[in-house]
Amino acid sequence: MHKTNLTFTACIGCHFVPFCAAEDGKPAAAQHINFSVKRLLKLQRKQALYLPKNKLLSFYAIQEGALKTYQMEASGKELIRGFYFPGEILGYEAIATGHYLVSAVALTDTVICEIPYDNFLKRVHAKPELQKHSLYLISKQLNAGAYLALTSAEQRLAAFLIDLSKRLRPVEAPAVFNLPLSRQDIGNHLRLTAETISRLLSRLQRNKVLTITQKKLTILEAEKLQQLAEGLNEP
Amino acid sequence: MHKTNLTFTACIGCHFVPFCAAEDGKPAAAQHINFSVKRLLKLQRKQALYLPKNKLLSFYAIQEGALKTYQMEASGKELIRGFYFPGEILGYEAIATGHYLVSAVALTDTVICEIPYDNFLKRVHAKPELQKHSLYLISKQLNAGAYLALTSAEQRLAAFLIDLSKRLRPVEAPAVFNLPLSRQDIGNHLRLTAETISRLLSRLQRNKVLTITQKKLTILEAEKLQQLAEGLNEP
DNA sequence: CGCCGTATTGAGCGCTCTCAAGCTAGGTGG
DNA sequence: CCACCTAGCTTGAGAGCGCTCAATACGGCG
Image 1 (cartoon, rainbow over the protein chains, first blue to last red):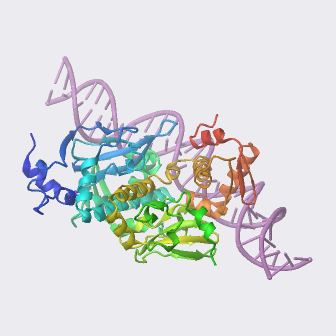
Image 2: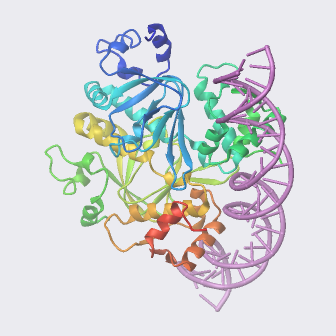
Image 3: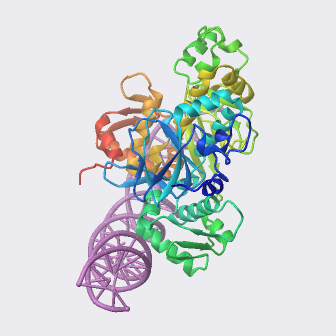
């Protein structure tokens, strides 16, 4: 059903690895599938991982694929709170209230590790150094999505793409990555319309800042993109 | 210098109380000033509590007053990340990187409890039930500022005022509270200009949704404000 | 009282949205 | 294999919301 060697590579860079390591300190990848804190889930595109008001039972670490979390505005608009990629973890926002606040849906076929909340707590309790790590992980979430605060559409999109490139390409490689998001999704996240996203991407291509064919995005001039994100486009 | 009975009342509703309680379980207020995890600070209006890049040494619980946290955009605009009021805690965002990411500045004369980070960790380590509480507190921050994601200026302002009224008036009382923020500060937080804030507040007064004289704000029709926040203003 | 920071209000502009019409790519069935 | 079909993307024209710039009013404080 599920290949073990795939699991090995999937764990590289996963923020949850410290929680999976066995008591004896052996590396996690060799055995974590059998370890009690984890369980594997497979989701198809558009399938929901959890829904708002569901009781918090587990956190979820992404092995392969991508998810979005979103809320519905009263007006019916889908307000995307965030995108999640391999190695990242969903569910922290549910700790405060005890239930999830958003819908989490797969953007592509996705493989996920489930970590029951109770096991997580027991594990942190047993190994005090994990306590610091858990604070670290949740704190990182506090700084996520800083680009949403920027004012102009171009600033937000540029900063968002830079953020994506860092998260999707942890090893320093040519700035090429797959963009598993529709224009509509990007717009619903950045509070812009799909048309505006499309226009901006077209302009960025005309200006040779990047190229985008289908889903494959290549950043040509990272510095220029950074300047746009900072609102320093020359008058 | 500092009256003890004032300290008593200040602790009511403070999220940090569980961390101050003595080992023997005695209530915190009776003794917490003497307890090692705390130290009192006084800040004057416009005085900084910490600056970006400062090393994370402590969290801070507000007893009296108010603070704002902000970053400077490259363009020089002040981007306010949040406002903090009595009982609320600053500094969590620094856990991930080990240093603060924003400037924290007093909006009025302010009294603050300082909690050294090391003591905090020791304390959580010593009392496992505090571990859950610390996760709870940081998780709550993940859901803060949800109004920032709303699209129209009126929606954001309405939702922001509702949020403020809940935080400044924890006991159910007439919806009257002091607004220790300038139009400019509100605008810098909601990504709007001071002029837009002023115009919106004027319109809300014309429509009898609220009144505002100087710094005193009274919500007259909470339901209508809620509808505006949801974008349900009738066409 | 006079000063200075803050708030209000107006006029005009520009960015982003809305609405609408093609266009492209990928999937399906004959 | 190709015609079709559909969902997503691109591009255009016009409207509206929020911004800029500017003048005036207010209010706290010396």
